[in-house]
Every structure is written in C-alpha cells, then in structure tokens.
Length: 248
Image (cartoon, rainbow, N blue to C red; front, top):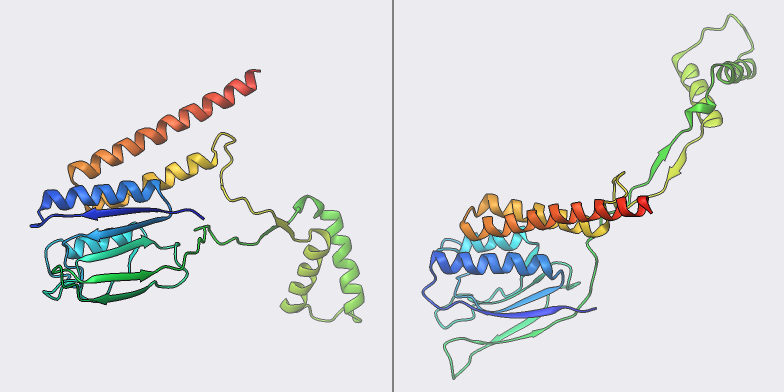
C-alpha cells in the first residue's frame, strides 16, 4: 500500500496567522491523501494544552482522524514540539519511538519504527431482511390459522390465550411470507447518477463544514466554499452524463 510523507516546519514565535495557515494546509492535504504521515518541528507545545494553540491543535487532529505519536519531550526545555502525525488507519499498532539527546542541537534525536498497515475505513455491513407481504392474503392467512388451531387445540371451547394467538400469527408469517435477506449496498441512494466519487466529495464537504464551525476564519471558509463548488459541479456533470446515455 502507498502513503505520502510531508515534512513541516513552523518558525517561532507562533502567531494566529501562522497557525491558521498550517491548520488549513493540514485540513486540505488530509482530505486529498487518505494515507498520510506528517513530520516536523511544529513549535506547538503538544504536551501542554494550556499553551497557546495547543488545545486547538489537539481538536484539529481529532476532527481530521489524525493521530500524534510522540509523547516524550523532544526539546531541551522539556516540551514536545517535534511531532509525528499519521492517518488513523495507517498503523495497526502505535509506532516504536525512541528519543535521545543531540549534541549538535537543542532538539533531541527522534527515531521511529513504523509498521504499516492499511485498513479501509468502511462502514460495518448490517444484515437486513424483508418479507413479501403480497403472499399473505386474507384467504391464505385464514386457512393457515384454521389448520394451526385444529392441530393445537382439542376442545373448541378452550380459551384462546395471547401466547397461542402470537404463536399462530408468527407461524403464519414465517410460512407464508418468510424473511429474505436484502443485499448490502455500500452507497445508500436511489439515484443512478450518484457515483462513488460523489460519495467521497460529499464526505469531504461535510468534514470541512465541521472544521469551519470550530475555526470560522477566512482560509477555512474559502476551502469550504471551494469544496462545496467542486461537489455541486460534480453533481451537475454526473446528471449530464446520465442524460446523454439516456438520449443515445
């Protein structure tokens, strides 16, 4: 399986403008690359959520289904600012990370052993059943109930209990209109033009909408509008292609 690696560097001091740019960049690249590794010196004190932008960065990674793997300090000041971030489905287990002092820098040396595994983030299939109630006519139901009671009751004056009636109706339903499994369909839509590509675009648009609610800045709003325009244009093109096929 393939993945892409991106190296990032945020120069200090970290400002709101710089944080907005890196947030927009991570949101954009993670939506385009499902299997991603981000490395670098982010100059965000990830170990201290009370520090500026640290808590926001935690929320951003959580919203994008990204995982940060470095837990120990990576700087001589005792902060975790050199990070290794990956898609949540890329590793079956947490990477093995070792940190050692670096005599040539105030940043420690980080070595990481990665065991790659790709697991598609697909919805769990559910078994669904249906009954063909057209086979359950008034005549067939009456005949089945007569046969049932003639075999189960010996005295016509015997009191009919709720349990007996429930068993009779259940047996009739299972005999005349038995349950049939419904095939699973990964895209739950009745529109023939709604393709898998449109499904991915809609998922991406909803992801940007969630991010926009938390970070309502100019760059995030612009990225959301671009994704919305791309999704709407893709819908129009899919409908046009279907109409051309029908015409021919």
